Image 1 (cartoon, helix red, strand yellow):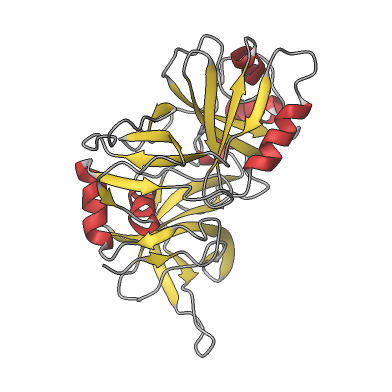
Image 2 (cartoon, helix red, strand yellow; image 1 turned 90 degrees about the horizontal axis):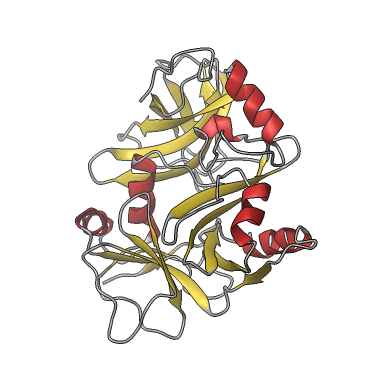
Length: 331
């Protein structure tokens, strides 16, 4: 078995694949896979906790999600926005009845914990970065935990299976080891964006399908922008899935421009090779780009040879006209 690690980008240090990306994708779909998303402190996803009697009402007031009355074991995704509505942080979490356990994207946990800590004021909450002693492990429903090892919390994943907040000193659950290649392929095929990978500093929730955003709740930072765009419709950009031309043996690099008729209309976020769909990617493109338009991206080149252009068809994930003023065209 050949283990290959990711060398660059937010997932640097994680396993790219364990020798057979296709078999690993099938293991994820079968519920027998295990993905170690944070194998060591500072690598991969970061873990934090929020404790105290005011934790849910406090997070409710700060984030885009409706968290008052959240039931124990109920998963959530919530965003922290700038005053102008741009996405700054994401929390994927669960409350166990006494503690909110959450994970965030690589390299972001320290800044998120610092910001949350500054927002405590007189509220009865405590925020802690737990990444030194706790990692995040995804397991399929067919995977059992080994021996006496038990997760500190369990979150149902929107992609199926369970996200375990796993003590670092415990052995990993026994299943088919799965790398980033396969895990990302499954996520991209499902049209689920990653904050900071498929988004940039200008992204508002409306552009990615209001991920982690609840429209019927009290005021929070950035709400005015979200509500205005939802009411009037037509967000500046929209998330799409790109079905890349498989005859080109390359994938686009994150951040690569998306072009149509010679002009730049957006950028690529994440990409991977799906065992059935072939090469796929997520991209943010201008709202007014026709949904039937073919676009072009550039594959990663080498020092000796520039990257090749790759044509791609769009699969819209966000309706260009979405908003209260129209009937949504996409389910």
